[in-house]
Length: 423
Image (cartoon, rainbow, N blue to C red):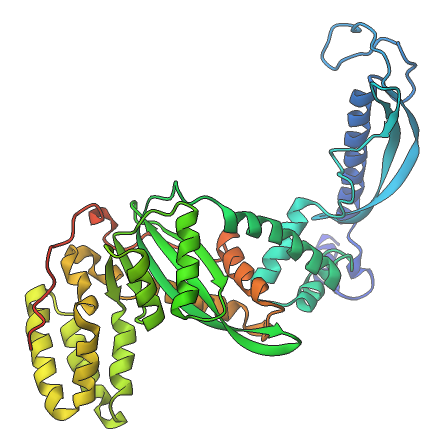
């Protein structure tokens, strides 16, 4: 008998008939509804100075006190109740909220507003976080509605998701204007990423300019992400000027992808900062200057040079690379020489930092994760939404960043000279 009961409870269909009815859920919802109504009632009691059926001027009993306190004068009067719809992690429910008028000092009255259930609040903070988190996980508004439909019994609509997302915009705008004076940033990583957005009802590719900071303790922090209309010198200069106006100190080192506009902007804004050209981007440039049949050989020679263990070895292998490829494919040698000493700035740092300073990989990984999350959305609604989504993925903890390798030696001063560039 007991075995059959267990089997019936375990094997009952989940989506058919009575499988939708859960007496535990129903009981919990009723308890929560009563609890919320009781909170609102107690809040109004405190505002009026008396309970629901107590007359003005009557003694008020305080929980835990030995007896009645002195009588308090009423500050208003009740006038019925109204129903409010509330969506919480426990599901949708109808709450009966008391109404009252409170007296002002000038003889007028005002409507009492509950702080337990703020005006126009349709859902709890936990539900808002859940909806925003589902959206940030890489789905769109319709799929969020379908995914949460069973949990909230259809109370989450496409518009609900959109409204919740718009509330995130307030935090985004505050973050975009925050002061950077307290950020102990010693290193910057700068790069742009291309995303598809809807402009003038047409799908258009735009560039998001991203600046990642490295604090003195080695922790990465997102400083800004904005659409500036492209990746030109003027666009980057405007972005960097905004960071400076918000108090960002001059960095010791800036790691860039080698884009001419970015390199010029950094040189104008921070002329004394060291600049490191990304070795991965330069590798791609070298391959673009040679036929496919030479790519493997170029890659082998280049990696032997860049990933050598000492500065002296890097210097020796660079000279050998230049001599060899001047004869075999002059464009490859010229492309390497074009980068100059900025391709090897990392050799001036302690060797423990070489891995983190050679490339813009830290920011490239953010780009990849961002694009993976928005893949299902194909085209984002606007350029501002794209930038806000990039920030929200980090702010919500959907994407996390660890400290850079070799952060313990960030306080050490770089060497005065780079490797010898003579070929």
